[in-house]
Length: 615
Ligand code: ADP
Image 1: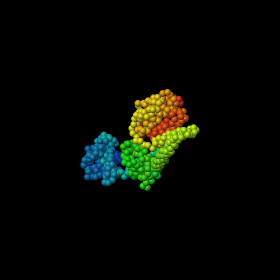
Image 2: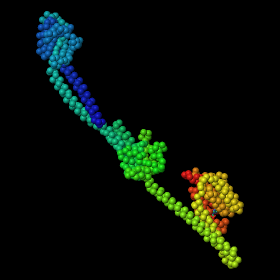
Image 3: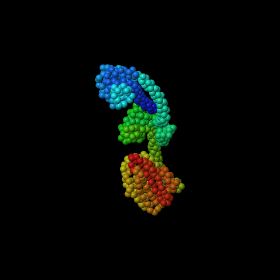
């Protein structure tokens, strides 16, 4: 029921109750007044008949009393009348059977005590009457005869009492009239009061109903709604506070509508489930992606639709319960048409204890999967091409060596067998042919070594780089001695997981370069290493040699790239650093050089301590 109606009903009930009480007491008062009036008029009728009554009281004769009583009854219309002495004895009564009996009822006693007319309403033979007790006093103006016969009594002294049943008929009508008028008046006042109270309630409750409207709007998410303040009282204060509250809410709260539109506009499927996985909400992307409408809320269980991609992996919900969240887990989602769609799930709990829910975001990884497969395919193709190239380089260089050997052999034979017969010019040409073939053999050998890096796969194992470096230096001891070089291998060189044969070659190539490209009387070389993050070791081979111009820092790692003429610095083909680079990269590492011309160079190689671990 509306507050307005409740208030109105309450006020009406109050007014009704007030009027009932009022009418009850008013009619009681009227009936009291009527009774009094009837009794009074009977008392005055009795006063007129005082002499007759006194005579009867004095004589005590019933006949005297009956005469007076009849006169009284005639005057007042009394239904019964009796004369009672102060002691309570009935000396005469219209009902003669009562003469001589004693009367000691409460009304009689009250009348005797108060010495004034008393009455009460009662029913006599089915009709309502006024039962009255009227004291009869001595009359001042008694006649001379009376005084002669009866003696002088004291005026005002009570001789006895008149007990009479007085009719109410005349009074009854007046009483009904008054009650009726009272009722009409009550009705009129009640309707006026109801009207006024209705108006009053409306005025007061208007502010309350406006507040109710405001609360409804805020509940619907319209935080900008403000309630008109129409009363300058406590209710007005409440409305002001409400407006402040809603303003605060609109500034600090994200409306449900806003949140819904964010969720709906998300390109990725998003689902909200209870802790058991029952889907409570899903955005449009989720419905479009899976084909389900996920309605009604809670009807579908996400756990039944998801399945791990990895063999033997734990399903998402038990995992979530254990770890509290899931980040990028590869799963299959069973779509409505029965297809298995590859997805990546991220999930986390939201809400407090008892209201915990799970937000799940799915990422369609079908494209990702396709490109992964394409990439793997490309990689395979590249590997095939690379190994074919390596095989080609190997075969070519191998095959080239054969005719070269022939050229070298026959040129040598020509020189040794016919050298003396040849013209000096021809001899010189032959020497040049021999030299060129020698160079070509070296080139082919280096090309073969380069191709071998990729072709030959030695087993990887944990190896001490200190030992590998020492072995590398020992392998070129002739060169070291020839140049009187000093090679220092730091004690802190680590153990790493690598191809030891190739790593030894790295050290050997770098150290031999450091000795070769050195113009100092004592070439000094330092091999050391330091930790680079948790994953890498940074090896360095430092020399005090001729240095490298900055523009060649990258160039020198290309195959057959040399910075000097063939004769300078002991010659070479320019394959050494290319081989080093290839080996380092095979170990998932990186190589570079820092150098200052004339001062020396430092070659750095960043190599994982254990390339089986992830960086
Ligand atoms: P090679 O030594 O056979 O010429 P490399 O590939 O080992 O070929 O080196 C390429 C070029 O880089 C060398 O010709 C040389 O000019 C330069 N170089 C290599 N190491 C050093 C070094 N430690 N100091 C100065 N120059 C160097």
